[in-house]
Amino acid sequence: MEIRFRKRKLQSQYECFQNASRAYGNEVGRKYILRINTIKQTKNIDELKRLPVLRCHPLKGDRLGQWAINLTGFYRLIFTLEGETLEVVCIEEVSKHYDD
Image 1 (cartoon, rainbow, N blue to C red):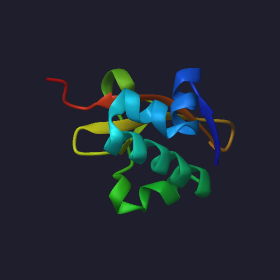
Image 2 (image 1 turned 135 degrees about the vertical axis):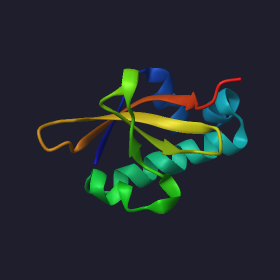
Image 3 (image 1 turned 180 degrees about the vertical axis):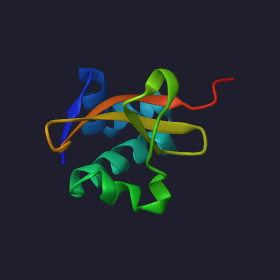
Image 4 (image 1 turned 60 degrees about the horizontal axis):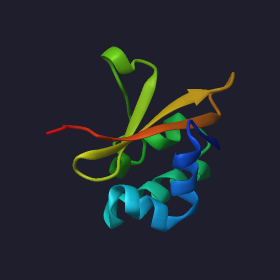
């Protein structure tokens, strides 16, 4: 799949581990990069959903149309699908799922 980023900052964090680590910490930063690489290697959303470690799932409510995959226990990567055959993934944000 093709990857796009909603903000340049998200792309910079993907391209440079130091930027990701500074923004999210070492563990989340490493998994952010790893998960995007995994998305790039898949052909479609069904393939992503079959990888149990990702827990790829559609979101509901205010986030209808968005998808999430796990980074760590509390952090998740939010993305949308674009294109006629949904072959383009747009990285929207890294979110702390249960904000305290």
